Image (cartoon, rainbow, N blue to C red; front, side, top):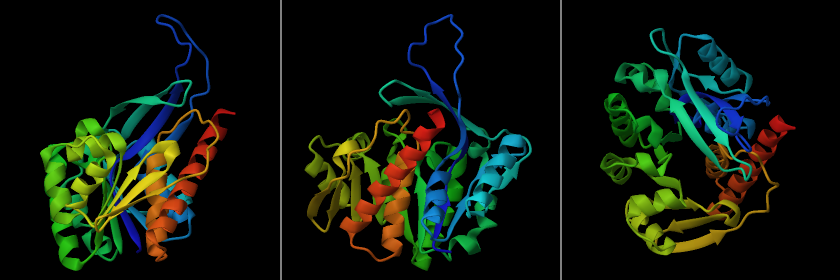
Length: 290
């Protein structure tokens, strides 16, 4: 297995909120999609590489749909099911300019325990790359499970890639885990600023570069900044069509970069593939609103 994504399993409900006033009723299409970090595994598989996903869903209809979606997309399903808690649900409030706010119920995601990962550890450790996001650390109940996996992964020599997920959930634990276990750090500008404690982007990259081998800071329409061994380089991207929702684009970007690394492409070419994959994702999501 080339890549194992360990993360959150969510069903996303996308709600356009432009011109919505308090007290009113509005009739609009509300696309429902499978989300969370499973998006990374799905796009790795769509690009032709082997991928698996480890997480936890509820023993409900949404959980069954999530698992079926992994199967349809060629992702090895290593999710556990929790009969006592619902599948994670995220409502994405999308504004006219494509920006969004998210309101989430983590549900079964908060009950991924060490035993769930231990049962899959043999398969996980066969991976070349293990990818996880900070959302997995959002609940203290997950800490033991994650640390056990990372310790074993380090001993086995698996590469560990990490994405903080969101600026507001970053804690000191993130910094400890990154410094001890992470090889590649992918994050956006706000996350880089918060995690590094710096204001200028090159200073952010240099500070984060003390912790990992490769830093990738995504900069939306400007592309991304790569920092490795004291050297930085900007990699631009093609202009994207305006989209109604950007939720999940970062996960698709990560998938493209991972696939580039699996194919032994130079970092710059991997970044270009990451931009292309994010662009493909956004175009596919835009069609949901047509």
